[in-house]
Length: 364
Length: 100
Picture 1: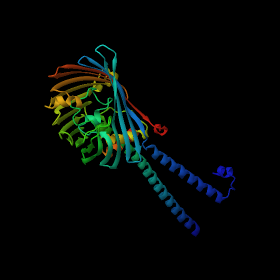
Picture 2: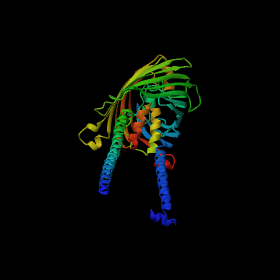
Picture 3: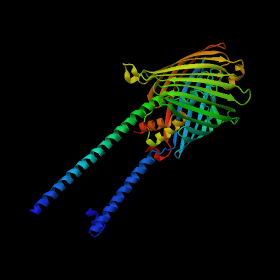
Picture 4: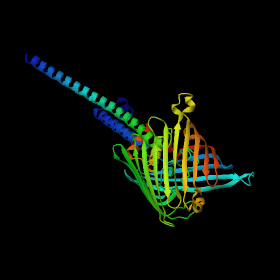
């Protein structure tokens, strides 16, 4: 302490020493407070640009389609309770012109969601804006190309899904020591604006999740408040056993105007195969079986909603190879059986998930 | 004679006080050490529970990503809390696991 006293030129009296000691203690306390505050601020969320990009070659019934996709997602947290999030999708659809001509086509652009989330209490989040319609599990959870196990969408995917413009309440909370419940209820207005279109609907979804056996079962409901005022119901099931790297998922959906159907999918990671572990742990094999039962109105709605126009059965088999974090190569083959004609469906491509902080602070 | 007697009493008292203070200090050290061990154990328990919750909630849809910076993870976990409707407790434990 004496060197401090000497350095600042204070006379070495007991009073001066005590003053310097007090000053040093205060300085240490200040440094500690700053360190604690700095640590706290490090945990504050930062804006992020994330999303996925991919390139796929699809061959359906002998027709080749090149499909580049970019789907950026911006996350902007505000304070402790708010999150502004928006995801867009730019999807190319290039096919040969006149059979053997050069590839040509357009790029579809869509705002999939642009929503403000307010985490009101632990059980309730209020969402307003444009959001993914909570119907089943595929639309909200499995749709991104880097997540889905098979690139072709399930046949029943258009039933009850897409995007809605309006307001939603959602959340998840434990109802018993080993049971969590998750829910979403919403109202959507009619919008015919290009890239922001939506239908006037109301609906919701509820799911029961058992974290122990990793099982979720749930149901969805949607009521159309325009046109034919039809309604749709759906059920979903997901199971991820603890003992094997298997992911089993299934959905059923029925619409009074569009038809009904189901899909069941199993994805198995070969990480438990004892041979060639460095390769096998990166490989995932996938199988999916599905059926669609067209309604009597299906021929009128099929092109608008992207549904089959007739009863259809399909079996798909796929392989995913996880090259590194967020990057996977994917390939699949499917066979479609329909009264409108059978067809093979091939898909080969690559999907990548990216994530960057927006601003320098995010790298800390 | 009185002075040595008083001295002995004072010495005994001082020794007793010293032993008491030493014991108290040891108890304090032991308590501090127990607190450190307890905090470490608690952190480790939270990390293990967070990993379990991560696989139960996030692993249902996608493989585990590499760990991003704590501030990025705070944003990602908030996003996933809304998207996947995970519970408040799960979110806190997963964030703890992903930022450890």
